[in-house]
Length: 273
Image 1 (cartoon, one colour):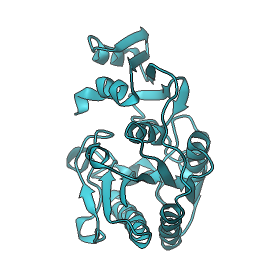
Image 2 (cartoon, helix red, strand yellow):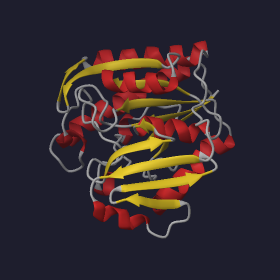
Image 3 (cartoon, helix red, strand yellow):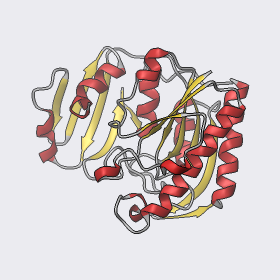
Image 4 (cartoon, one colour):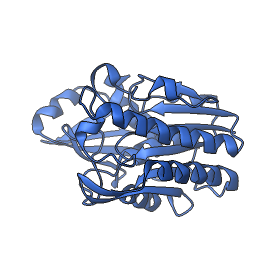
């Protein structure tokens, strides 16, 4: 069994402010340990379920030299491979070679979620909302749709209660969830102790992969597929002028249209390849 684990930082227990997830800030180093430990727990759970190949992707853009490489190298769990420094939502090599399932660890809710801790969609400064075929999605939805282009299901998510609710609503009740905190606002939450959160994640991953009662891969049903983004301000629309398959339909709205979601995403997000 081959699996991919997509990891982000905002959904980790005991993290609830931007200072913790931004490289160079005093609280970042402490949060890196929390982040690495929850990821390690997922790796242990996957091994316990019989995964023979585990690829972990750091999806957190911490900034500067730490963009997409916030894990503490000396703490990495053995028995997995780690993708570091790769642009967000561009890693598909494992899908092309053959993959059974993807997992989300440390995920956060989409922009505008009242009880979503540090909620945003891709960039809190550049984007407000995103839709796939008029279904509003967050980052987990985008990643699930990319995996779905290769018929790979998303089967597990850990994060706050709002994130678990969001992913379940999108993918179905078969998704195994691990709620490690409950948001009180964007910047406050009721948290599990980190050790308890790691135990919950390890057990949840093992259960998700062992039972194989998986949701179907997330594949938008109508064709063509559209990916629409509401930008934070009109000046950002100019970045998309002249791209094939991408249309600026309003001062702050951009739509990418293609035969598959990967094609729609690729032509929209190609400048990050």
